[in-house]
Length: 90
Image 1 (cartoon, rainbow, N blue to C red):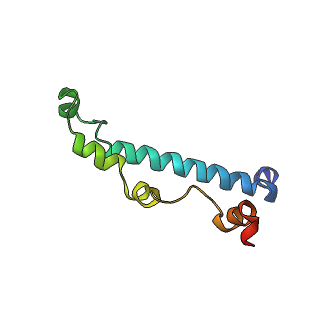
Image 2: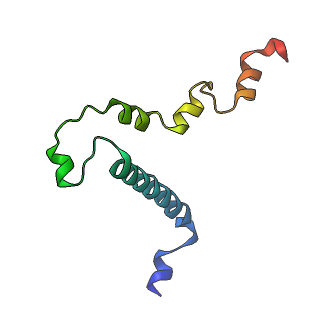
Image 3: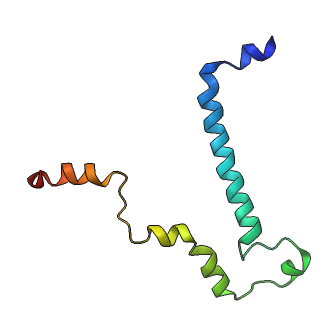
């Protein structure tokens, strides 16, 4: 009876938004812990100090998504933008 009082259909979008936010934060945390070259979890890695591993850092920062969107125009809906920006073409 207490659960039905707190879990109503009106709060489902809030649960979904919070779930997406927690998922994005978890993804970022796991990505940084596992493959970031500047994060060292074990004792030997921390004792090494600052490493000059520029190739590994560049590989981390230039991931596939960044390479894909590098030459794209920053538009969400290009056809609508061009429709309103260039009325002579229509």
